[in-house]
Image (cartoon, rainbow, N blue to C red; front, side, top):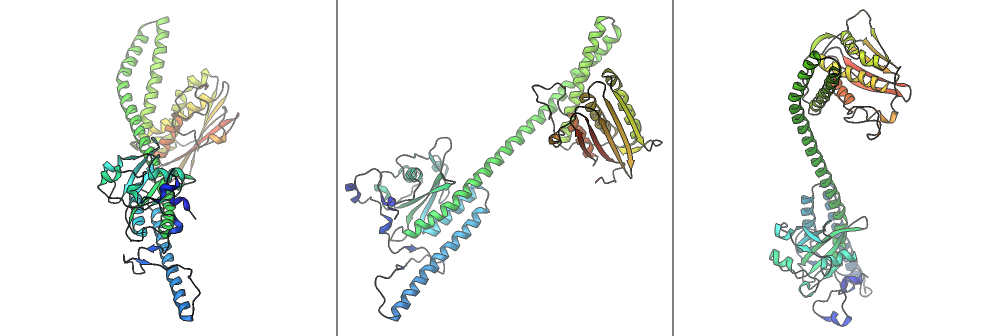
Length: 484
C-alpha cells in the first residue's frame, strides 16, 4: 500500500539500508494523534483497530470495543476539524491570509513544528516559497527550488506524497532552505497541491513532534487538507489576477480620460484661430479661393464638433455633467434643430417632417436646453446619415401626463435586434471599422443616452433591417417628475 512513499530516487536496493532510507507506509503502525478530546497537546497512541488475537472473555471484548470507539471518535474529530478548515478556506478570498490559515491548520492537525507552501512559478517552472511558518521572509521567497533533485520537485513530478524520516541524509533535500531560515529540518512529509489534474505546488509539514514520527493519519490528513487548500489557493489567485486586470483597465481608462481632456483643451485654441481666419478670408475673397476656404471652414467646424463630442462624453463618464435648467419650448427647439439640418436633408433629397401633440401648445419643459439640443441633434443627424437618398425622417413630440415622448423615425438601413444593447456604447459601430461607408466616431448615440439619463429620462430603439428605425426618448417635464 503506497510503497512509493518509501522509495529512494534512482538508487539500487543495497543503498536503502542507510540511515537516510525512507520508511514505507506499511511499516507505520499505531498512528499517533496530536490532540485528545480536550484539545491538549498530550500525545496518545491509538491501538490497532484489529485485535492480535480473539478476546478470551467478555471483559477483553468490552475493552477492545472501547478502544475501537475511541479511535473512531478521534478520527471523526479530525474530520470535523478539516471540514471547519475547509469552510474557512472557502470564505477567504485573499491569497496571503489564505496561505497563513493553511499552514497553521497543517501544523496543528499533523502535530509538526513547521509547514511551508511552495507554488510553481508560471514563468520559470521552478518552485518558490509562497508562505512558511513564522511568515515567508523576503529572503525565503527569493529561494527557488528546482523540480529536479529536490523533495518538492519529486512530489510535483510524481504527483504523489513523499515521507522522509532523515532529511539531512537524503540527496534530494535542498539545504539552502535551512541556511536561509536558520531552521533544522529532521523529517518531512510533502503532498502535492492539485487542481483539476494539474499540480500547482507542494504542501510540506516538517519535524513531527512525537517520537514515533509521521504515521498514516498524518499522510491522510495532509492529503485531504492539500486537496481543499489547492482549490482555495487557485480561486484566490484567479481572483487576484482578475482584480489586477480591473486595476490596469481602470488606469488605462484614467489615462484615456486625461488624454481626451488635455487634447481637447489644447486643440480648441488653435482651432478657434483657424475658424476665425478662415471665416474672415472667405468673406473677403472670391472665385476658386473662396470655394477652397469653404472646404477648410467646413472641415474645421467638423473637427470642433468632434472635440465637443469627446468633451461631453468625458463629462458623462466622470459624472461631471452640470445641468443649467431653464424653462423653454421643446416645440421650438425641435423646429430649430430640424432647420439647422435642412441643407443636409436637401442635399440628400430627403424629407423631414414634424408633429406636435397637442399642436397648439409650446410644450414647455424645465431642463438644460443645450443638453436636450445635443440629444435631438445627435438623433436627427444619425437618422440622416443612415437613411439613403430620397428617404423620410419624422420627429414626433407628444405630452403624456407630465412626460414628453419624443420619437425620431426614419426609413434608413435599420439595426439588427442583436445590436440593440450595443449601439449606445461609446465608439461602437454596427458595421466593421475597416469596411464601413458611414463617417463618424460612434459617439453620437452614447452622448444622447448620457444626456437623457442625466435628466432622469429613458432612451431606446426599435428597428427593422432594411426598413428603418424608431428612436424613443421619454423626458420628465420638470425635475420632480419620475419617469418609469
